[in-house]
Image (cartoon, rainbow, N blue to C red; front, side):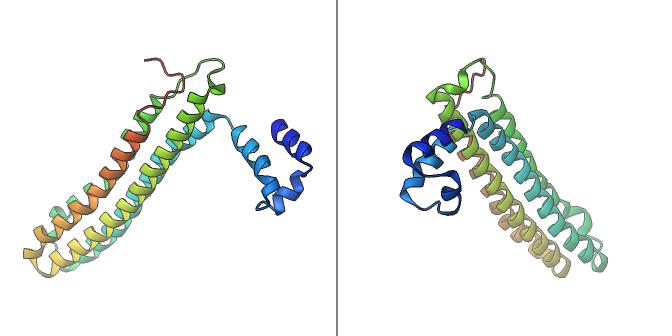
Length: 198
């Protein structure tokens, strides 16, 4: 904060002015200094939290969508209740993707005195933050798509038993979207090192 206040004082722009007129070119230095004064460890831990939090939210939302349809359709056709639990398992796999990536990201974070001042620490904090966002949002959308596909699978199976395997293939492709996010997150965080002992 002191850095940001000093730079805004030297450019003649007050913090209040940049709060309301953030689009002015004279305020860019203020926000750049404010952004750089945030500790990289904060970015890294927020990335880990976003990876696991959004993934679990996507899994819960998908289970909610598919579970409601499964219970409703099994009233009409009780035979679908056991084999359509595969849809719930696919939704739960989305949360497991987020937990795996959060563990991988957390191994990149350690503590060394003064490590947060280097350029590698800044890169690592931003990389882990970005990886957490990519994994979290892709798994949130994956959970929703698996939930909708699982819901339609339960309803179609209740109507016609021959449609189960055909719609299950669509659900598998929807589940693959989360794996793409996991791969991208691992690649993004591969070179991050916030003082973790190797």
